[in-house]
Length: 203
Ligand SMILES: C[S@@+](CC[C@H](N)C(=O)[O-])C[C@H]1O[C@@H](n2cnc3c(N)ncnc32)[C@H](O)[C@@H]1O
Image (cartoon, rainbow, N blue to C red; front, side, top):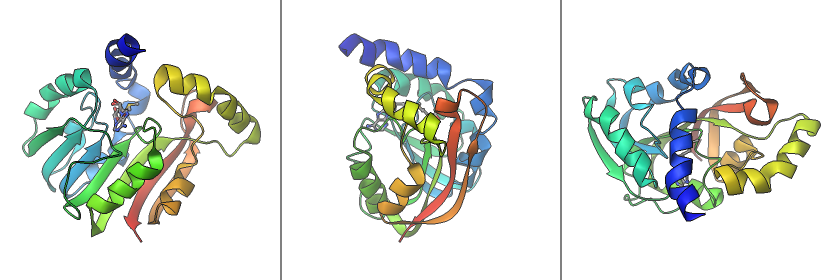
């Protein structure tokens, strides 16, 4: 799995995340970021052009060396400072309460220990800080959810993606108040298309 995870999968992620169908939804998360921002799993840095003037500094966390290298190009185009963090979201190398906004776009499905990661997000956020997210996850349709459950062992091994996470419940159970939440199918295969888009604040 070394070559797959280190070389092949990051290239697939780079290509897959550039799809037009996703690009047109990027305005729903990154532009809401303000102040000192932490983006989880920045991938190829596709959100960077969508950040607005209210961003003071971006901490760009990404465990893949290949994707960090790809993201350096869009990072050079922005007007605020960018620090790349070679880290995993389960152990964020930032101080407690130093972040105004955590941004996650299609990343919470990829983090193996999401519970620990959500605790870390809470820890680094200021009390009035916010988590903004656009994530795919568990479908409310039992037939689709059943297939998501069945396919998770495969999707996790091959793509590092847990298809069946009920993102709203997981975020609330980790001690966040939901400020805004939209759930709906976006375009694409139903297994991947049910989305959770919103903002949450540490309770
Ligand atoms: C589907 S991609 C999304 C990339 C990017 N957020 C975007 O919107 O294009 C998932 C990302 O999560 C990253 N990732 C995987 N495991 C992670 C972890 N434990 N902590 C943080 N990021 C992780 C992957 O390397 C990848 O960049």
